[in-house]
Image (cartoon, rainbow, N blue to C red; front, side):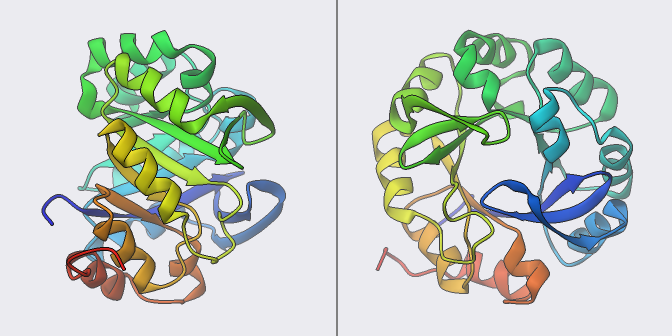
Length: 249
């Protein structure tokens, strides 16, 4: 399947690379103290796109780890996307036009002000704006996953599609950081209901999870803890992303 992208993830907390369990800031494991070096290692390992999250920013509602984000950008020749605390058009413009981020991810803002997504798409183009939908029991969670709304993932995705969003990053919070496998069934339903380019996130633990994401027709998959913990190598992950089964199992 053409166009399937594997995104190594860098989650930033207090300037270093960490992974959380189910989004809990108190359950953070530090994996690297130099985000720029980690980004460069992913690039040298063959990654074609990097996924970065400012965890502090997700709670603060603004970019907090800018020095680390800039260090990552300076280390890379490949594109990077950034989420976490991007809540205004001005913040998005600064990150895209001044910091050099290639795509911003709107999460909390997408739920609380869907029209902002439309304005962002109109100003920057659909390729430079992704929407992040993080769900717990099918309901959208926001503000660093600290609050769970009454809105379903499907409802929000369809609303954001009307605003012009074309790329959706879907995370099942219960799976994130748990190495329990992504929620491919929910991802498949969301993909079928919206027709958007969907990137699977949360819980990837085996090469089969990557192949499964590709098989359901997803546009990509985000891999974090499995790479850091040594469940498989980046080379193996990239191979799995290109050699998935012809159809979902």
